[in-house]
Image (cartoon, rainbow, N blue to C red; front, side, top):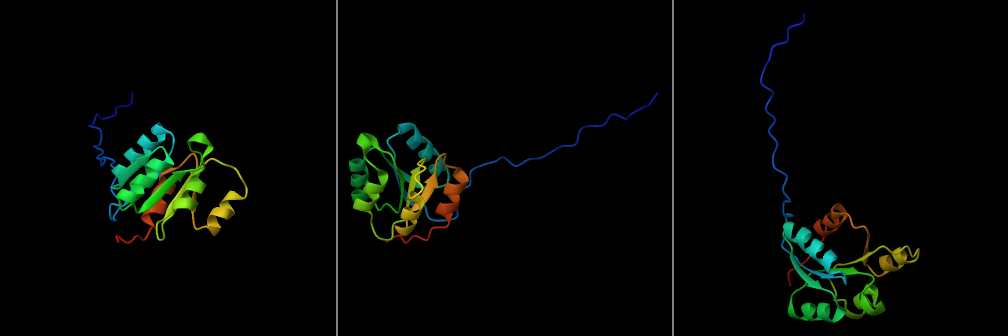
Length: 144
């Protein structure tokens, strides 16, 4: 017979996992997407990271927010209501010095090059939080 001593299990201490805000200013971010569920998810995620989020489901709504608030970053979905395109909204309303990302599941092979030439970041769907956070944390934004 083999005897094995009984001992208490070792105590494992784990730190609770929390979304820590980025070590940056709390940028004001515009999220334009016709899907309310996506907007809610983006708001939850970005707020946890310390950003101030302004949501719009329609381009007209987004334009009002841009005029009322000092929006510092735009996150725009490509496919909006009534066959409107996010890229068209960006091209018609973009402000100088405001970083813009177009979020899309489009597989148009010319889109990435077109966006690169326009200095618009392409974020592919399904959007990975790490990709978004990496892009946002690398931005250099003035508060003016």
